[in-house]
Length: 320
Length: 280
Image 1 (cartoon, each protein chain N blue to C red):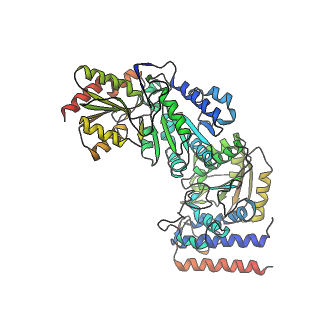
Image 2 (cartoon, each protein chain N blue to C red):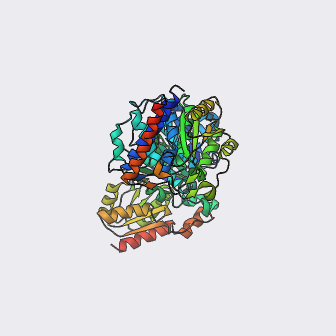
Image 3 (cartoon, one colour):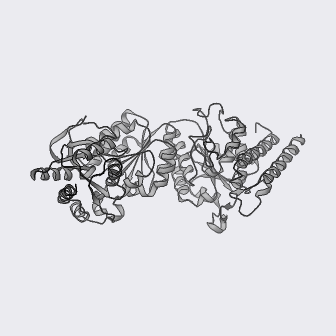
């Protein structure tokens, strides 16, 4: 069960602190929890974890392909590996290893890719993952998660620890907004309704969640009732929730911190197109590369601002 | 060795026959590499590895990751002869719904410990298995077989660095150094040079032996087991297509062959077995 906070504010700690704290909590309870990283342990705040659990905090060095293979192998003997590196390397550099050694081999690996989309900011185009979820989405049986805040991240980490399969969890290392009350829990594969509405549905996840809620609030002031779904599970997608929303509101706008090609918008469009065609618009990176800049600058050039979402909602409603 | 040299050489010839039987079901397969690794398979399953064919998932077993996963037929032949599944099942290779796909699959075939086929990946998995069991303080050994062409893959060398750093003493690898890959000679395509030296430079205990000399392979494995703080690599000098009369060709990586060729190869292998048996 989850509860949305009354007022959305930035969290007190960076998301990476929650990641590291949750890893420690899980490792303390379960010897099978092992951690692999590719020379960015310091960047993700896991130095303390490494000091506490040196025998299972494994710095592989800068060799992502081997890390995924090693994690897959370790899971074959009953361990529960978590891997981490920056998103582009967690996806692009290892796609065949994830495909064959983890997913096709039906092994048990949880992969964390950090610095989702625009949050890579001044690391620029080489380090800005706007395709990671799309690449992973084409691999059968991989579960794709994009947690919204620290409460959700910790809950999903705890759940996946004791689930079996291949998981890709897309996070940011930075401070994000607190959307959910402490103690909230989530059901993987089920959308979270943040707001009900009848004129249009806004579907989002991760870093875009706050902007989407803000857009819904602006629309409400103008007399437009927007339903907001947080689709933190990109795969398996909550088809039922999408169809119900399409039927009820007759218009859908997706908002994602990712390329609109093969991203959340694509996934939602596939469902809408097959089950309940309604006008749609996809907000996100419009098939272009990333570049250096502040998060606000990047949201601006990618057309992902609150104003862009509001405009897209109005335009989509008009096309009903 | 617990078994006689004669018994081991007969077992290797039987593995070649069984591998060819499997490939004959498809009238083709990765003949060259399956033949070159058959003596190693005889050494591993006939002498070295702790396994229980009736209980393929036995916790105390030694593991084998055949990183050169395209040579499934040599592995299936061995597993069938060991009793993991009926020998008749070899005739189902690549048939729809088979438990014996062209490339090794841990979810389909009893006795296959890891899914392989995308080169360079099996060795990482073997390293992960060995690391996992070292972490769990388990005594099992992990064996892995690489192709020489496979050593073109950067991932092999990533895995090599990792395994040495983690001091994986219970990991023993082999390179089936038959000097050829799909398109031709390794030295012309991507020259591997002194492979034994390369693995030594990467921090492995490294040996080089004749890959068709079973006692030499077994002795090298015994030597490797004495080294507790390093992974071991045993580079096997082999002949691609060894002991298969129709595979003595330039392009012998994947070979399509008619029934007559198969029968001729089996006849030669039977003659070899008969000769070995008559030697007393």
